[in-house]
Structures are given as C-alpha cells and as structure tokens.
Image (cartoon, rainbow, N blue to C red; front, side, top):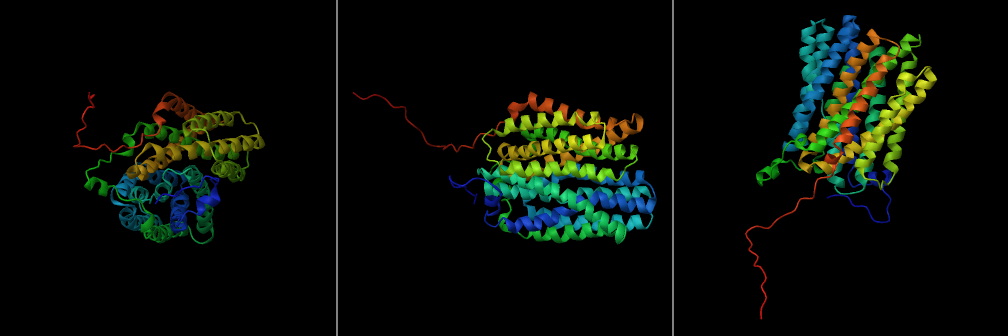
Length: 423
C-alpha cells in the first residue's frame, strides 16, 4: 500500500523513515550496495600488486565497470519482469563466484586475457541494489510528496557508500592482504544480497503478472523522457570521471599527490550536503524546471574547474560542483517515477545508474589522454564539455520530460444512446 502524507505533515527525512517496514529493506540494502563501491578499487589494488602495472590494473578495472554499465539495464528489466528476488538469488551467487575466480587468477599470475575473461562476468553480475531500493520506495510512496525526499535520501546514501567503500577496500588491501578487499566485497555482496532478497513483502509486483492479464510492458528506454535523462546522466558521469582523473593529475603535477583525496573529499562533501538539503525542502517548483536550473548550475560551476590556479581555489570550485550535482541527480531520479509505469521502474533506474558509470569511464579515459598530451589541467575540460552538451539536449527536448498521463479505464461493450428530445 502506498504511503500517504497528512495535510499538516511536512515531507522530510523523519516522516520518510517512519514509512511502515521501510527499514526491512533499507538496512540489508545498504549492506548489499556497499560492495559496489569497493569493487573497482579492490581490483585496481590487487592487479597492480600482482602485475606491477597500473595500466593493466586500470584496464581490468575499466572492463569491469564497462561490463556493469552494459548489462545493468538488462538486469533491471529482468527484475521488473520476474521479480527482484528471482534475479538476486542467482545474481549474487554468480557475482561472488566471479569475484573469487578473478582473485584466484590474479594471485596465480594468469595472463591478461584470463583476467579480462573473469572481469566481464564480475561486472555483468553486479547486483543493482540501488535501483531496486528506489523501486521499492516507488511502491511504498507512489503518488506521495515524499518521493522527492526518498530520491534525495538514496542519493546521499549512494554518496556515503562511495566514500566508505573505497576507504574500507584500501584499508583491507594495504593492511591485511592485497586480495582482502575483493574477498570482503564478495562476502558482503552474497550475504547482503540474500538478506535483501528475503524481504519479499516490499518488492514490486513482477510485471509478468500484468502480462498474464494481457497488459503490455515495453522497455523503459522506449519512453522518450528516459532517453533524455540517460543523456543527462552521461553528463553527470563525465563530472565524476573527469574530476577523479584530473584531480589526480593536478596534485601530481604540483608535487602534492596527497591532496587528491582531500580535494575529491571536498567535492563529495558538497554533493552529500546538497543532497540532504534538497530532500528536506518541500518543493513547489515542477521537477522539470528544477532539473534544467540545477543542470545549468552544474555546467556553470564545471566551467570554472579549468580556470582554477591554486589548490584552495580548486577546492572551492569543486565544492560548488558537488553542490550542483545533487539537485540534478535527485530530480532526474524523481522524474523517472513519473515517466514510466511501475512495472518498468527498476529497469529505468538501472539505465540512469549505468549511464553515470559509462559517462564516468569514458570521461576518465578522455581526461587521461588530454592530461598526457596537453597537461596544464586540460582534463578539466571534460566535465565542462560533458555537462554543456547534456544541458543542450535537456533544453532541446525538455517537453519530453512531462509526466505520463494517468491511465484511464474505458468500459467496453456498453452502448450509450444519444439523448433525444421528447414532446
């Protein structure tokens, strides 16, 4: 049953977290999504340790991320079609087995092709816990003003995950064993995923039941607004990937590589704080307009990265970029619930998540090439270019972001006579 908000209640985190039985999927969901942030860092550290090459380690890690981005929407569609539990049970088992296989191959000094062969199923089987949690919120809050708050809460949770996950993975790999990060990732994925799958009461009704009644459920990507949002999220991914690579190159060029973590932490902190504020506001502005304004602010702030001359100025601009990302990200996820039918929400969320991952991987690659060839912070042009292009698409196709019209039931087989006058 969808949650309702009383007229005198202000939407906020307290009210959201009092949603009946929400904690039954939030807690295991947080445990199960934590490994996702550990995966690429753990692969990077282990493969670099066993091969001595950052290039090889980066290639294997990138193959995992690309595989996840490609296969995530198919996993989401299967979850919509057959139910989250039916996808998670074999999915987390396959992922844990693939991670352990990759770990064993790396420790055995296997050839590069073997590492790639294990990296592809490892990325393809990453459980899409974040989109599944968002989909469950959609069931609980369908039509409620709390949907925007839930989107903000999930965005902050994602950001917290990407702060804690790499720290945990790095600590395990450097203080316990180079393979400890991947072993912990596989264990958390398996245990957390199984606990999350066990919460059957909160999962959306599989779309196959609708098909059995003769209803049609097309792919979420067939909705024009979802395609526009995918482009917007590619631009957001370009900010993450471009920032990561360019900050590393910048701090290395000034002889202070230790500042990399600090500068990226400031950027992430801005994202988290902005997300918390966005979720606490009872918005009266339409989400389509909020998305355009938020994205314009993101493109404007990203334009200043290339002009930063000192670490302090770069930190300040990075903070503004982080603050600008959250409104665009949160509003995009909020719009999906209005654009697609409930039976396609998980797939729609995975398209957006995959777009961020794909944009991040592409941006890191391009920014790295620019830094190698041009230097002088040229990699910071990637977030600017990615966000400006995406903003142009949003402006040009903003009409496609209008919410879908409510479904109407039309009675059939009943003839209505035309009224006639009677003398």
